[in-house]
Length: 300
Image 1: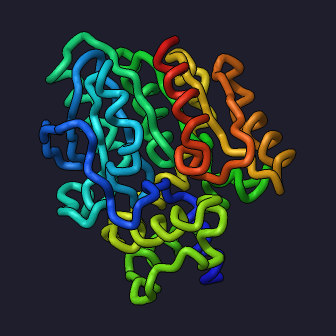
Image 2 (image 1 turned 90 degrees about the vertical axis):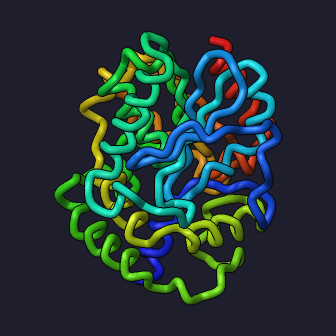
Image 3 (image 1 turned 120 degrees about the vertical axis):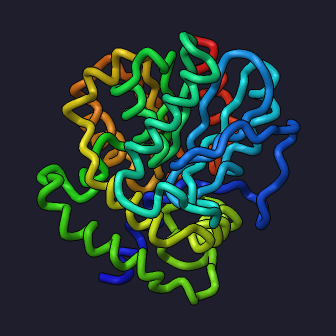
């Protein structure tokens, strides 16, 4: 059971960059805002573009793409307080995901009233992006969801529901919050990170950044993410032009395609883009393909 929980925890964790230490942004940033649930670091100029990393991941996950994006966009890097080992502030309790959505919407309203932003979110960040499109469609011009399902529990089978999955993720929340296993040295060869990235350095970085994040914040955020069922809201979400990139690992290609097409079937207007030969971290495993799809998304 402990191995399964560790696997599921890391399955929901978004990808960091390749280097063992987070590289500096290539464009000089400025600290735009420290809010209760997120900090927002901005760089560049132009139309607003919001980049939301996933669970237990700092903003540096987007570093390889920021310099190029900042030439044409006002890029907003939006990590969750506590994920980078910083002060969790308002994330010390419940309501992390709704708080993140509210903070982003409030920042956009304050800094660019009346202007919509393009939004990109990976993993849990993709769930946040869908919630933002659902609750604040007047703030979102378009949405790119990177390897996030509308209901995480679907990974357990077609009969999974919020009610049936609650005991598993409630138990996991407590285990993560307790810091269980954090004394172990992170290792890219650990089987629990095998599905995170096809690159050894990437798997090691996932383990390192997960270990650096505040365990109580990670546990609560995972609990909220895993039990958030957005399938009934897909029609409303799809009123915002939405693209979903999803990984197609070669060993489970048919199952992956069936799962993703089935889960997003209630909203045929959502554009699904499979990325072959990739694990969960598409931007890490297939960086040039990700760059191409991101540019195409922004050009629409």
